[in-house]
Length: 69
Image (cartoon, rainbow, N blue to C red; front, side, top):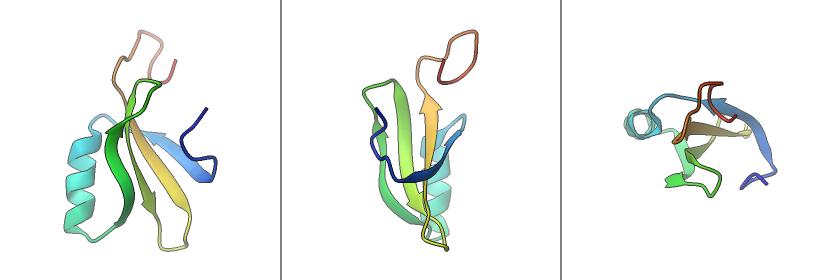
């Protein structure tokens, strides 16, 4: 089960820590993270200017089918 059922979107990225660093420089509203989730992804949650919560996740155990599979 996702950490936050209120996510408007979940987007896979290749390096969530670098993304978080860039977002901090740009004063993006980071709600939590980066942190590792029980299901094998490293994630950050942000709130966009419209108030929607978006999660960016990096698959830590990516298989041959791609992230999240």
